[in-house]
Every structure is written in C-alpha cells, then in structure tokens.
Amino acid sequence: MLRVEKLNIASLPPLSFQVADGECMGIEGPSGSGKTRLARALADLEPAHGHIFVNGAERLETPPPEWRRLVRYLSAEPGWWSDTAREAFPVDAASQKARERLLASLDIAPDLLDRPVSLLSTGERQRLALARALIDDPPVLVLDEPTSALDPGNTALVEELLRYRLLSGCSILLISHDRAQIDRLSDLRLQLAPLHEAATGRAGAS
Image (cartoon, rainbow, N blue to C red):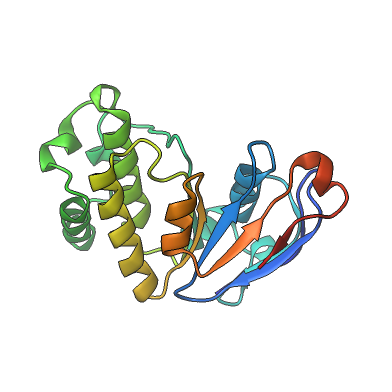
C-alpha cells in the first residue's frame, strides 16, 4: 500500500491519499498542474516535504536507491544510459526469464534488445522501458503517459499487462491525457487544479 500524508510540492496544496494493493489511481489535471512533479516526488526524484509510506517503509528513512525499488517511476520520455536495451536489464537467470515473459506480453521482438536504442522508434523505447520498470516487480508503479507513443493495439497490450500487475497486488498511479484509459484502469482519481487555482487548495482525491 502507498500512503501519502501532507505532501507539499512547490505551489501545490498539501496532498494526502492512499492507494491500496491492487488499486490504480488516475492522476488528472491540465498541463502545468503538477502531475509530473507529483510523480517524481513520490519516487524521491523531486524535493517535497511530508510523508510517503510503502508497506510500512517511510521515504525519509529509506536510502534513495532502495526507495526507488519500492516506488518505480516511468517518465513519459524514458531515459536510456546504455547503447542497447539488453544492457539495461539484469543478467541473472530469474530476471532473464521475467524479461522474456514481459517482451512476449508486450509483443516486443527479442532482437530489439540488441539494436542501438538510438535507432528504435519512440513506441519501441516506450514498451522496452515499461518492461525494464517491471522486471523486479516493484510494489508501486508510477506511470507518466505510458502509452502516449503507442498505437491502439500496443496500448491494449500495455493495459492488459497493467491489469495483470494490479491482480498481483501492485499499486499503480497513472498519469494520462487519455480519459478513456483512466476510466478503464482506475479505481480512484486524484484531480489536480491549474496552478493558479491550486494555490487556493483546489486539489484532492476522489
């Protein structure tokens, strides 16, 4: 379970909410309302005051690398720090089996692992980054526009994989401009107001 208590991020009002195991929270709001800043703060990548708990662990008492194994953030434009995708995946036998299952679930040809990342399409990089994020089964997944570069067929594959993760107990926070996608996946929602309104406190979970 993810629990957030009085989290203060820049000009946003204090936020408190929780996402249970197996629940998906859709995070909505216009551009510039702070959705990505919130997502990054949850993964301890953005300065924020307040408390965040995952299964009893508290962000401020957990080393950042360990925290990011609990709360995995996938940005809208994932970064790559290797020439090929294969280099970004763990090499132990269990991880290789998990990688094969994830590639199959996302209809990713295995040979893409060895192609230079710079030559892959945006959609291929996006699906590979999702597989990379899921490889070690993080308990909390924070996704920022995870299907923005995908066609309807690949979007459906991603959503099916996310539903499976929810069934296995993962908590997911989903940022998407696709209202229908949030309708399909989310159990609850967090609506962020434009920043000039957020200053008055108009942001909250439902």
